[in-house]
Length: 406
Image 1: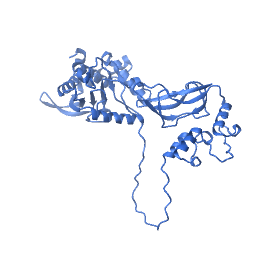
Image 2 (image 1 turned 60 degrees about the horizontal axis):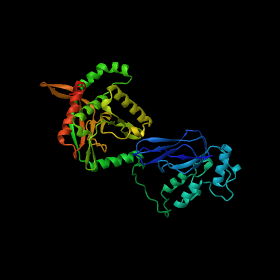
Image 3 (image 1 turned 30 degrees about the vertical axis):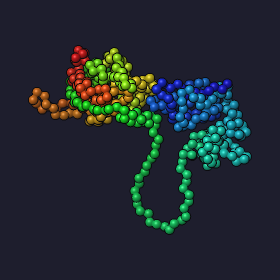
Image 4 (image 1 turned 180 degrees about the vertical axis):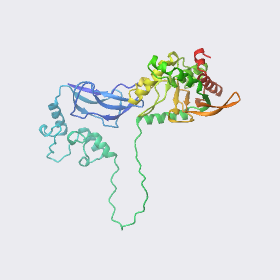
């Protein structure tokens, strides 16, 4: 029985993906739920599990191809055995079945034609690629569609020039270059950042915060906190709490623009930017106002771990009413973060450094951090932008305000 292989259903905000890797070739035996391919979307990397066990008898995509939700890209023969797979592949490439052995050499065709899959032949005809000059990466050296695509992408060899008189070569140094296509995630991030700058009237307000009270509080309770909750007590959880505290006092910071309307959100979904091997991702802490500090820290730790493993779900990367980005992790002293559409503001944290400050007429050293809040001036006035950042500063410098709601 032939079973269709379909691309998984994408999230509502995702329209297409790219085949990042293929783990099986036509003729390979597959197990149920075995990963056949990696699909890169603008948010995460998805796996394509085999719907049934059997033999892969058809595959119509290659690495780099764009695919859409529920697109059929191949077929699995659930009743096929290894022998049946040989018959199927032999029929497609036009050679006797006994000329094909998995792991053995393939007898050349009598007419001298290169062994190539039907999709590869079709693409070669469309692009003018000579199959005889294409090295096959498929089983037993068969030319696959992606082999033809790669050959078509190579620049044509320059025609031979007549021999010239020998000249003395001048040393010009080694200046290597490498051209690498953007990943889908990087392309989408680039598009959205440009869109944000072109659409929003972005301004940034700055302030500095004395981290000593928070650092003292953390040092006092970090061991007990970890023992009680099973997660380390960090600084990001306090900043999430402080941000929610400020957003409640100044709701316009938590709003967004929809056409000519301002949408005020009665919930607080805070995006926390984290690094991953594929680039920056922003998983969202839903209803952060209803969570304890321990719950927030657990979510942040979980997001960070799964971001490195590429296991964040699409639903965890969509939405959000406000974002916090911590450039201080990498040593940034100050920056102007770009708003994540359709949000209207973003908080940038930076590195904490000992600096001289004046307290009660005395110069003292304190661990200071610069804060930056970028905001959309179309709906947020300077007053609300500045006061909301001051509210965050005050909550960090005096954490009791978060408990007393001051």
